Amino acid sequence: MIITVVVIAVLAVGLGALYLRVQQRQRAFFADRVTAVGLTPAPVEPWLAEAASRAFGVQGNAERMVRDQRLWACDFTYQASRTATAAKCHVVAMSLPTALPPLAVFPKNPMLPDNLEFESAEFNRTFSVECSDRRFASALLTPRVLEWLLRYPKLQWRIDGGVLIAWNVGYWTADTVKHTTQAFDGLLERIDPYVFKDFS
Image (cartoon, rainbow, N blue to C red; front, side, top):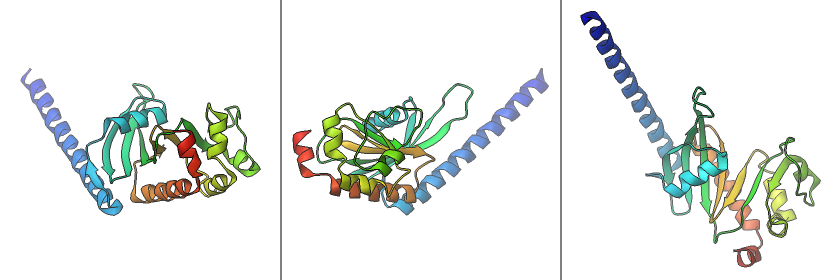
């Protein structure tokens, strides 16, 4: 009996020490990323956690957020099943001038039907688009916008109310945040101004 108690106590101490080391490594990893990206750490905002869940289509945990006045990034983890390894992902969000209808653009998925097609055959081969408002999709995704998006063939993003949201596998890094920011900045520069007036 005494031996069993001792073994359990040793295991508990060992697991506690392992947990502390993992937490220390995660904090150091986060601190290094914060330094590299130049954004401010802040508690995860509920709207961003909800938007991340919508983007991935699952409930998960949003954590380790950084932000500035118009940009947010956070890690997102989820488990597809109780026995599955947690998926490590991230989202990057940028504010829009005003809220717009839902629209999603993501790399071509041959399993999904192509309900929307655009003037660029290359864009149609590269991306799939989901939007219930065809008029809005056509107004937003002009040839100028399509040409820009083809520079970022692996970018998957959506409009979620008043923000653009990009999501992908892996925790965010300074490079992924910079890459997404460049893509979103160029996208916003190319959207016709009337879109924000007519569809807000």
